[in-house]
Image (tube, rainbow over all chains, first blue to last red; front, side, top):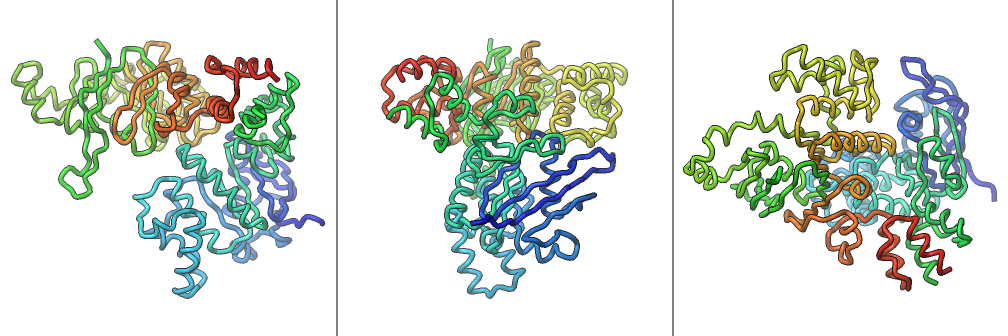
Length: 275
Length: 297
């Protein structure tokens, strides 16, 4: 079956006032139900790309299509009903006075009836493990919990695409793990949901379906994680590391111990070695 | 004599309030001169509260923090005793300006505190505040900017047009420009990419090698493993112990410390859990572990 294109980025060019190209002819496609991670060091252009995808910035040249519809001033209202964004700073996106209010915010904007709304809020708070916190205020929550509330608010709107814009970079390790696992659970429960995660977390990237690496405003790699990260030296050249699990696998393969490519966690490698 | 001593230090937020919160409870340990110490523990374990007693931003509700000869306490009994024994004058126990020159504090997201129109002026602010003359402050600021890897081409730029890592280096330069003998950094690498993180940590390492005592608060166990010579663990407002990083990560009961174990040690733990037969306890890096693993297969 042919894959259904959900996002198409075509010949995208962007620069700020200094005219130095931040994105230089960037093109890629994302398919329905994919979990794609976008990585690159600071200044590679990935944050700018996130802003362009969410129409916070407008391209200088090139086009972005969401489900075939060009992203522009006229289409943005309709497209916003398809895309949700989880931003970096958990404190800047908490709008409601309680968890319940915050998850309900988007639904209220869509005029969902009160009773129905309560039901939906409860359902999605449960999905992200925040159902026991409905009456809590943001000050009583950790960063990871606030991000989970933001995700519940997006899931409740039944959107097709979620963009995580460095959503874990301000969290403690527990929060990072929470969000990493939540993305995987979300994807399992709703295989049609498309997830794009702009991240520094190469361990997360290794668990995604596809990795796009941006370097100096250009696409450097666009492939499955095992292919993208296979050459450690090459990654170092563009100032990126490779996931630790792959370091172990690479070292073992030098000693003729081949760990199957579908094993993607250190726990899996340990289990394999102990068989 | 230790550089820093915590004597039964406790701190309570909202003491008289129903929302009273004991942030740190009966903390006792010492830090030696030129240590590179990592302070770790889950969010809410009391790390940030504890370090704020080091320069008098918070005064211990009970006990006292001693930094060189300075005493920081809000414990009335202790103040009374020290004054009575004529060891300190009451005014000395309330004035922390000299102490703050000794203890440089780099808070989370220090770049939010940048405010001057040029990088040089921003770095000069600290030393000027501590009484350096204009010319002296300028010389010191230039020296420190060079030390953090920002050459003369940065001096007259606006700090706000720099990258995240560069801004953070400006902020650190501003702190070290006052010549502190102790540098305390609260999560200095949060929000930076791997290169930015390495840059900042290598810079801290350099400052340490030049003789400064370093205390770094972090959630990142790779930082602990690769940079600190000692690690202090706090849990639920209490002190759990001080040890070498490798000692901590090899502990069988590490999960009781509520810490994220670095992947290398996680891997060792999984091997143990799944019944790997050979002795891997001595392997403290991936190369030595792979050697053992490949011998058997």
